[in-house]
View: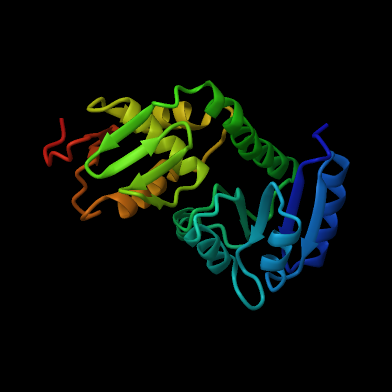
Amino acid sequence: MTSPSRRLLLIDDDARIRELLTRYLTEQGFDVDVYADASQLEKRLQQRRPHLLILDLMLPGEDGLSVCRKIRARNDNLPIIMLTARGDDVDRIIGLEMGADDYLPKPFNPRELLARIQAVLRRQGEVPALAAALDPEEVYVFADYRLDAGQRKLFRGEVEVPLSQAEFSLLKVLAMHPRHPLSRERLLELSRGREFEAFDRSVDVQISRLRKLIEADPSQPGFIQTVWGFGYVFVPDGATTTP
């Protein structure tokens, strides 16, 4: 059973899904709040912040992508799992690019959603212990960026660059292995753990988002370079030739 202190917020306009997931997740020990749309989200986040947001993509009024974008734009690392009845790759890519931590197409088995919730919360729950164990001086510097492992934050000068937990973990793994090519599978293993079942293209999507955040020209990346047919390599000085 999961600790009852774990609060979930579910936003989905399908009453049947709200009822099903509320009953199932409550039985698993979660404290679940539900809304049919995102109109009350800001007030809810201020009054009773959840540990994780389950967000439907297709909502009446403001859609899930817009909600996710707004949350990430203010440097809020609230874990987000997106749901959608449209399960094609384009929707998955867009959802992840907006900063979602995971994405689950409908229809799905509630047990699969539970597994993904637990995986995301497990990563989040490890943050305090990890931060306490890290040397406070463990900082990775490249160009005018500073990746602070203790704070789990990325800065450009004195300005924080917003990253989701998944994006931070991926960038940290890359920074820990400078000039060492890593396969997509190895990146997933090191940044998320073997228990996390990710989308086939999840690493590529997260890399694309990181490039948009840190590269001068994401179409010609200097820091995170592609090793064709294999994976990626992190080049701290941004040299244009991939090793």
